[in-house]
Image (cartoon, rainbow, N blue to C red; front, side, top):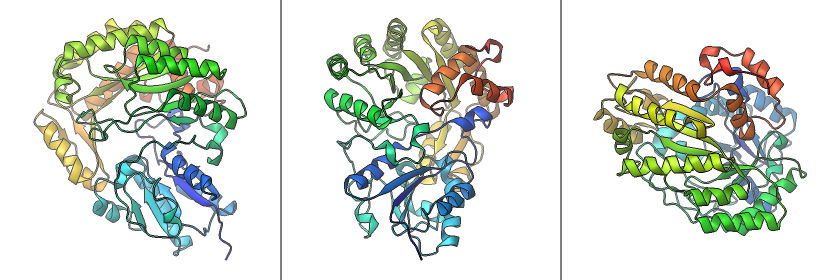
Length: 464
């Protein structure tokens, strides 16, 4: 039997979008830069490798294409990455197809946030998995091709290479990524990286070189890389150095990143804007002092909100689009929501768009119930106590004021209050929609979508 000698990574897709199912949501592409880092590691070691994304396509379609293109069956193990619990059902269906077609195919499954919290629970959820990689895999990925090394959740520094986007099947459709650092460790109760120490940012010269290298991979075409860092908190000196390096290399690359609202100064933001920053995702989460304390975002809410105001003002002054993330949290009340709404109203002129959603407990019972018990003390409760065991996703009733249905309605209402179609398209097309996805195509997808599901105001919808 012919077996492909290309090491194949598959990033599990989703049977439906994780928030709301509509045509626009199904257009979104999420580059699995973690799996790409592993594929790049193998390529540098002399192996052939490819990364295939499941996206929102059926597992049957992806598997059929693998067979038709000669990418299955395989000489080496199939490397399956599950980036979120929303991708678990897709992975289950895909693995059944793989094992039915070739029972001897060794399936190695990674995705640290899904596999790592409770490997015994995960084995029961995905019995077709032959090997589980619960942590970062660069140190042992090559050994996994022929051996069964001992795998564990270990701290692994950011690799010193540029991600090889040429290994991504259909890479020209995806906006690229540049990994700047790993870890966070800020302790927010809802965050999966709350206990992972933040790593020092890569040297500006290295980051600039990676930006240039990625642009070369794309043939010099326009790209909008995402500078990946769970806790991006550069100093003003670092930002100025990055601006110097991008000028020295003659780069004109507009990029995006994310950070908290209280770890970056306006001076730093100004330097980053000079270096090409054009969109920033800001983890505000809430503007209610009560909820800031409940989330353990800060023990000084006033200072936290002043920092957020100053950073937003800097974004506006330096032409950086600010997308603000808002989290409806356990114990949310009409009062706390009103505080957040009033603060957003006050700073609306500096906000390009918002992303709003209710808090959800992710993970199996072993980890999810720790969060659920904590949130119960604030007045929240899960819709279904068995959800953690069945899916790893526990949707919550937030409080006596807001059950799950009301929280979803409020999320949409708040999003539409600060974001119209123009802003939504500008933000999504920058990083998440396929490269080349036009405004005309967006307009057609809007018309094909249920307006009740869309997170932006239709009344302001106009072609630009």
